[in-house]
Length: 350
Image 1 (cartoon, helix red, strand yellow):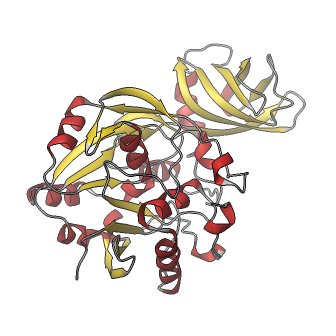
Image 2: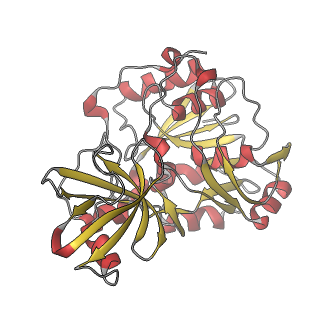
């Protein structure tokens, strides 16, 4: 299939710039996976009504620890250092701009004596290792990184001077545990502790895994022929407890987000069985993919021509998803990371 088959008109004003409060007050579009029809318009706090004892809800426990810092090069020019993961005290893997100017040995200065020195070139696309110091010393640099660093929100969300502590909290799921992500698994942003308690009390089991979202999630598909697209690689960890829960599930296996779906389908060893362990996945789910684990999906509304939209279309059908998106636009749903959600399941009835 072609990338142009997954395009739709998304007005700029429909891209959510802030998250709703409380988290579960976001809207929820219910789609019947079997018929492709929109079944209902509800709110996320209504989700337990559409779950039943025996279902298994699978969450991604990754925690966003990436930060974006803006400073100045030795020439005085502006530079950006996007920290993707921590290697050691003060030593980080990062994406830098402008990459051509920031070669090995180059420095970027920030406020309060914080300096980043490029110590290694990972690739020519701007990936570097950088060592931070504070007034010439490694000690104290991490504290400044945390204080000066801004939340690495997606590029379609305007970078504002809002309280960064609040934004950092809101761009994180309430169940985030394992640091390592460059972006939040946004389908999980709608859950509250109270809602998870209601779900558990109804007899729905909850399993947890980790897929660390990489910086490739921000990269567009450049090939029109989807078979020519190379997916970025991301680290996955599936505990044995989660694998056992999958194997013993009596009801539906509900993936909370595209990250959970990719993790589970990457680890599939058969119908409703997965291999526990740690591994890297570069799985690109597109139409024609055979789903062996996940049969229901909670997901947000995604960018046109994105791998996430292609995945969702593979799961529910291209025409059904584009029709559901058209309905969501007509009904004033909010789109993308801080937007509303969909629940796609075969047996949704009203």
